[in-house]
Image (spheres, rainbow, N blue to C red):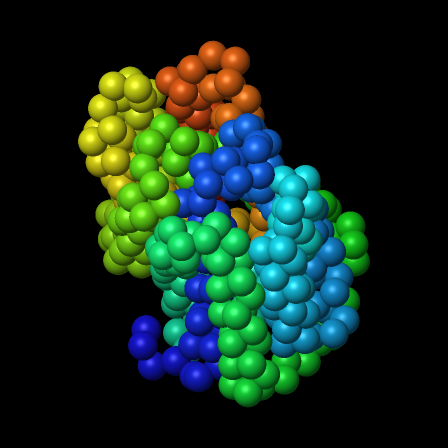
Length: 386
């Protein structure tokens, strides 16, 4: 696991910073709402615009990388993130900030969709090792993002955006130096290929389940800060613990439960656990901040297991090339990340925070149902050794 080429560590390091951008705004959401005179649902559009553009752009990442190569695609993605994260820090209205986060999402799509394929290509130990390293980078980024957002955002809400631009610029330089040139694939990806790949029943089932799962995931990430009633440091501390749980359970626990129960069995059990946690948050909302904090951190453990299992299924369930299957899968699943933040805040504005989390629990229930009813086709394509 640790005996990897320098190029793998360079991509993983850059991926950590890329994933930091997801949770970076979490601790400063209330501060942004106050400073830019915006409602929670308006501020939640920072997530929605980011993930909506990320999802749609997934359909073109393979088209681009298959023509210019993985390294150039990664560098373009990082450069776009640097530019739009810096512009986000200069925003004077919530509308312009939402727009710049959308541009940030484009860079994120170019980088994230290509990073896993590049890591699979250069890692020692095959696909499984690359996926675990990739999920470790995801978990580390999710934990460090809120921490950096809290440390810089506690001083000035604009600072985390400039901090991200600086970090991504460093990652850009590291990839230029350490990542060897990657040749474009012999076969070029067509724009329609990711959508065609979704015609495969196994990949379509995995993606549909991940769509509803991500609704629950991003309800926790994007809406919980508004019910904690903490300052930036407090929110950052909670989601740092949450992100650490994501990282530890995705790397160390997911492979164990996968070997013990099989991919679909472990995934179903973890989704049921997440449903229970979301119902617990719904019942605790407005009554016990302590219970919410504990349940959020517990959810990180379940999310870490789910992330690894979903990624492995998406990489193995289809006969399409991995970059194409990944693009189609990510197009569908990131739609859940785009819908959840805005809908969660809107539901709370028109009813209550409890209803928001009950709806998220219902979405994850649908996700688990899709896995159960589609288990025959998913089991037929479980990764080797499971």
